[in-house]
Amino acid sequence: MYNPPFFVHYGYLSRDNDIQWFAPYIGIGMQPTKFSISFFVQTGVALSYKNFSWRLEYLHAFLPDLSLFDYKNIENYGQNILIYDFTGFRISSTTKFGNLLYAFPSKNELVLEQNTLTVFGIHQIFSLDAQIYNNDFIILTSMFSLGFNVVPSYEQSSFYFKTRIPLTFDFIHSKLGFMGTFFYSGHLSKNRPLIIGEKYSGYDEAIDVLITKPEGLFNQFYDLTGALDMIYRVYFRSLSSPFDRFYVAIGGNIGFGILSKESRVDLLYMGTVAFGYELYDTIPFELRFSLDQDKNFFFNISVVSPISHRFDSNLD
Image (cartoon, rainbow, N blue to C red; front, side, top):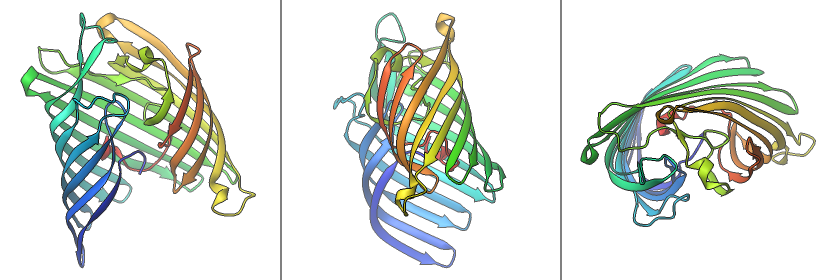
């Protein structure tokens, strides 16, 4: 998978021709949140039949979000996931309902000063992932998702639209990748206590386990963002397998962030040097050193491949 979750499951598996049941099961692992990642215990049921799969589960965090370390705001929620896989594309729907983590203004509704609270909410995502072109050397895919948030106690509803279009060129000893990203969010209700938008974090999809960062940059939410990412990896092909999958990389991105409430437009860019390991078009480990437009230095140990073609948006 392109980003977490990483779960270990134990349960009863039953197979009968094209029907497969995995029920009940329990698990432990980590799941992405709006801010970073949290560690959860999990239980549920799963069914798959030909191109269709369904999963209904309950997740309860036992460690808080890594970027917050706040035990007062532990997430616990139900999750219903429907996936239809076809040749070259996937349609999926994910519904979360329960105590979810949101950001609310704290002082004069300034975006940089915010509270994170766990309140009852409903989060719905519809996704479409498609493979546009693939001849082994050139791979072009697209990922689209439309999400909705409803927080009844705050009379709050909002939406967002996100797209990612990665393009990669696979050479014998190296790989060159580009990815265009676009994000737009807005309120559907007149009451607007909830902070919505996208945080700029160098690579939009980064889930950072260990990071040195200036807090102000990472707490900034933008209503509209767009960016172009580039990465060039050189592999140690002269080594024997599996060590030939280690690589050194250079890359970066350039884009913009718009905060409509303050009529603010920021130019955003970052340069990066990285060392990592590739496993089936996924980067399970990458050590990254970056410098942004404000000369802030970042050190990341990442479990995410910035540019990948794996279908994952049902986990957005």
